[in-house]
Image (cartoon, rainbow, N blue to C red; front, side):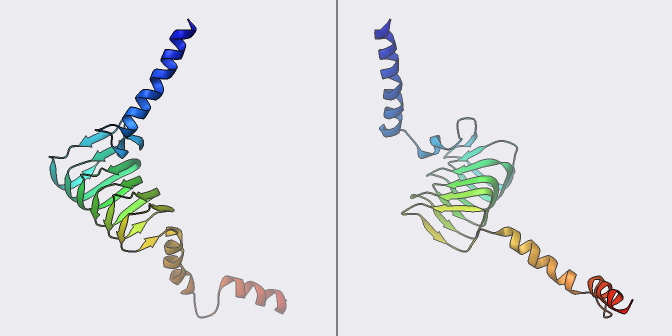
Amino acid sequence: MFDKRKDNAHAEPEVGSSSGSGAGWSPSETFNTRNAAVIGATIKIKGEVSGDENLLIEGNVVGSISLKGHDLTIGQKGTLEADLTAKTVKVEGQVTGDIQGEEKVIITQTGRVRGNITAPRVTLEDGAKFKGAIDMDPGVEKVAAAAPKRAATPANGTSEEKAKSSQTSG
């Protein structure tokens, strides 16, 4: 009985170690791609891709991809000329276009990105190629855009100034 447990316990690490170092293993497999839809390496898509599930792209996409609330992984063979929006974006291949991550964007050592990244957290692994701008505080833009509307108050003063003057005159 104990021998069987040892064999089972020993067999599980072998499976994990062989998938981690054996041929056919992809870094994509470690990033929420188990239950993901896949666009294979020979598939080419032109247009808009959207959905309500995780997606792994190993093929070629030209257009836009929107997976709000879900993960998007661009595999090592993936080549995209697209703007991307997803909860988490992981780039192992090549992307030309802007990337918006609701939670985070990861550019791996094999990843190449030409475009702007907007996300609260951004990781550029050693060896990653990136050209563009990174905005890790997208909330500041919304506040700055709203500021001119608040600044446009009537010439006779703001409600705060009126409150102060009525207190001092009364």
